[in-house]
Length: 151
Image (cartoon, rainbow, N blue to C red; front, side, top):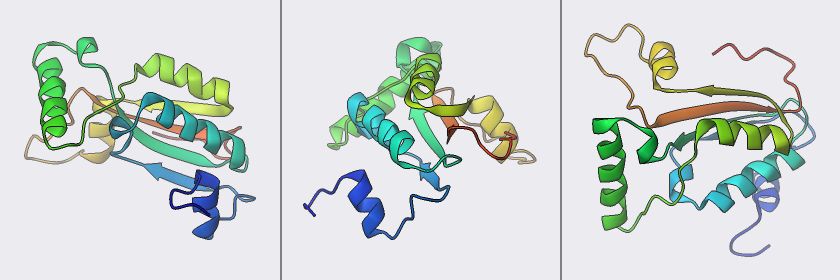
């Protein structure tokens, strides 16, 4: 195994049994990878994971697709990350990403944006915390999920 293993090698080394449905969590990472690396990883998961396996991942939408302050926020955050040597390399439009996931073999693809995530994860907070408009997540299943995704 090389110093930089493939996803399959890394999962095998970690003891993951790819013959059973597996849950993958990929949060706060995709913007630091090239679009081809992100899509390649998703394609590998679709191809190697057992049917019913699920991935939840976060991604950032392009600044020009956002209004005013939200667009400026993404631009500023990306510039700050680049200034410390961690540039944001990929941005995805939700509809295009959903279509690509379906082409890869993900059956159920649920995109949820900041409103849905705030309702699900921040409901009942009294401090006014909300997620910014660039915050997006997708929950996708390889093939069809045995259970409904109820986000």
